[in-house]
Amino acid sequence: MTTLGDVSFWYSDIGLPRTRRPALSGDAEADVVIVGAGYTGLWTAYYLKALDPGLRVTVLEKHFAGYGASGRNGGWLSGGFAWNHERYAEMAGAPAVRRMVQAMMGTVDEVIAVAEAEGIDADIRRCDELMVATNDAQRQRLSDEVKHRAKWGEQGRVFSIDADAVSERVRIPEAKGGMIVTGTARIQPAKLVRGLAEAVERRGVTIHEGTEVTRIVSGAAHTATGILRAPVVLRCTEGFTATLPGYRRTWLPLNSAQIATEPLAPEIWERIGWDGHEILGDFDHTYCYCQRTREGRITVGARGVPYRFGSQLDRDGTPDAETVRRLTAILHRHFPAARKARIDHAWCGVLGVPRDWCATVGLGADGIGWAGGYVGVGVSTSNLAGRTLADLALGRRTELTGLPWVNRRVREWEPEPLRWLGVHGMYRLYDIADRRERAGGPPSALARFGNRLTGRE
Image 1 (cartoon, rainbow, N blue to C red):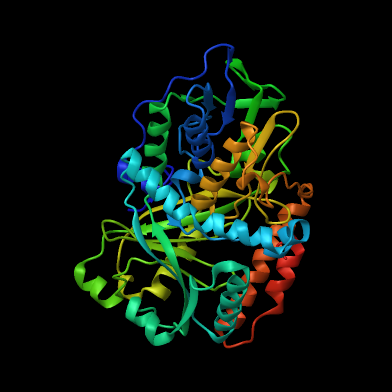
Image 2 (spheres, rainbow, N blue to C red):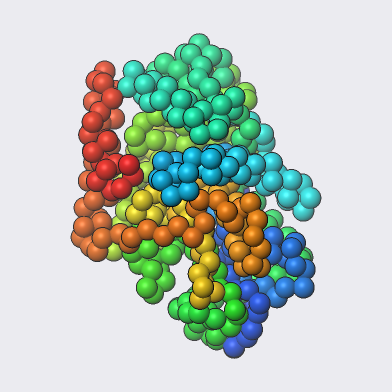
């Protein structure tokens, strides 16, 4: 029987926390308050204490550390740049964007170095990223993507391979070519976030779990059990930002879901290949993301129901039946040797999407800071955000604080029902485009229209 929800498979792997850290009890003070104990908040706390060990840093978390996307994601430590380079360049110029690309690429080594220094066993395995094209239209997008990324500073790290070279790595029946990105890694997300929470506590950071922030104002975070005052308050809630009063339309909580198979037998792996453990996806408009886990499972992630009306969230990661069916179909299409494998777990979560699909990090004159809008590449982006927020909070002028995503603000999403109609319309167009392209059609203009409809292009 498939386990649904229970936060994620990654927590089934290591166990949900048996006890929770004490909630905030009464009014208190700190030098920096961080709202949200996911990757962003914990990385920020880590670097704050590294820069100023005497700083009083307190993290407030509604559930438990790593409850959100940090404990549910696909485990891609990619160092990639998923956003619209041109939009950043309009404000800061092309050289600044290339510096940001280089900074993003450096996050892979940085995360691995911290994990090693802190003794965090997160099933980290260095590998390549492999994006597969399964029809002619996807092969055109692949070629365009390789050129685009080379233009912005990733030449040498990103290159294309032909169908035979793809099959030498992993045997996907319809593969017509692939894009390789070097310098990436696979992780077990829940192990990383749990280890990071323990690491910041060892450095003297206080984490209060079971403490929902009901309001953020200049100089304080309000909760049901007390007010925590500090000159700097950092909002690190990413996909959960819409649950905060006053922030419902700031970032749209876009749903993504995954399944995990049972551990596959050696003879099945012989038929699939995948000996390099690449993090693997495709060039569908409704793209998938997969990994081969430590114990020999396949996880497959993609968009299910893309968005819930009114920015509503899931209940402990429980997906709907249609989403599980779609994910299973992707598994069977790309890995037919695993067609008879049991689906052990299915779960979902949300990621934060700004109106222009460009991530931001910043700190206002009122002492309220933020980071997020990672659009699905948060494992590595959150590390760069944490380092940048730490510099901003301490008033440091560094190379990171001069990057073009710092203090970038965009307009809010439209009120309902417009944003529901827009997002669901976009994914409906994606679905039609993918079906036409699989039938042999050219790159679809429908997907381009869907991107423009929601501000992605």
